[in-house]
Structures are given as structure tokens and as C-alpha cells.
Amino acid sequence: MAACREGDLVALDRHLPSPSHPRRYTRQLAGLGTLLVAWDGGQPVGHCEVRWDGCAAAEVRGVVGDCPEVNGLFVWPESLRRHGIGTALITTAEDLVRDRSGPRIGLGVKDGNTRAAALYVRLGYRPAVPRYLDRWSYVDQDGRMHDNADPCAFLVKELG
Image (cartoon, rainbow, N blue to C red; front, side, top):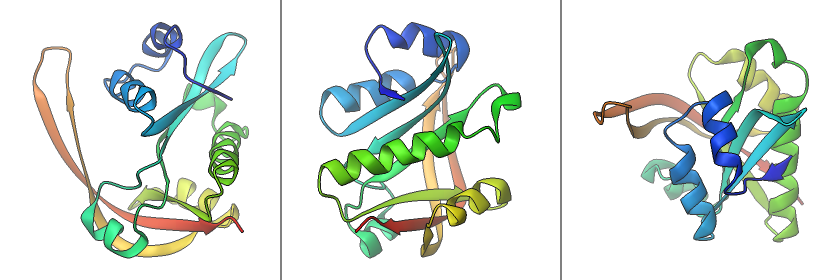
């Protein structure tokens, strides 16, 4: 696991295409996040962002404040899931928060994503906000804006 470097963006877009990579990298340059990348033989196979300013959802911030958030956790190809890559990304994120003397870290899990929810509970995350809407947007390759709202739960892990 390593923080994303500018030169990594090409490989990320080739192997894990996402319109959010440039935005997340820009947040990293501004000190608002750290985009972590998991590598396997020179190829990116997973990523997540530690959002240092916390979850953007007002209903979450009202309960947990600016608790750093793991956001955008993704492992690909699917055949590599359940091989510890997601756990390693989360563990690295937790270590980064501990290094900054952060007392806790949080993450959202989409309703119905039972595999991810089970992983987070196994890693010590507990519900803090049972229901909220994770609102997010992206611009597709044709320049069209897409707005989304996923029902989620927000989980927190105490790092003390």
C-alpha cells in the first residue's frame, strides 16, 4: 500500500477506471485526503481514500464530526476480492490516522452490501449513524453529470 503519486494516475485509469481519481488526487495535494493504492506486480488492484476532513454527509457530521473517513474502497479484478487487499487498505488507513493521533476512523457501507459490512464488523467497526444518504456525482466520458444517492450506514472504529 502506498499513497498515490502523480505518475500512478495513468495506471489507475488503465486498470481501475474511475472518474474520481483526479479529484481524489487533487484532494491529496491539498492535504484533505490520502489516496491509497494497492499494487500487485506493478499493477494497481485496489484503492481507497482517507478523507481527513470526514464524511461529507451532514447527518453523519452531526454525529461524528470531522472523524476521518475511509471512502471509495475498491478491489479489482473481482477474483482478487477476499484475498486481504481490502483489509490491508483499511489497516493502512487506520495506521495513517493513528500516526496523526486520530482517536477514531469511520466509513460508510451501502445498504445490502453484506460482504463489506461483515468485513467492517470483523475489523472492529460499529454503527454510529444507522441510516443516511451518501450523495455523490461524477462526470462520464461524454461530459454528462450523474447524481447518485445511496442509502448507507456509517460505522466507526475507536483506535485508542
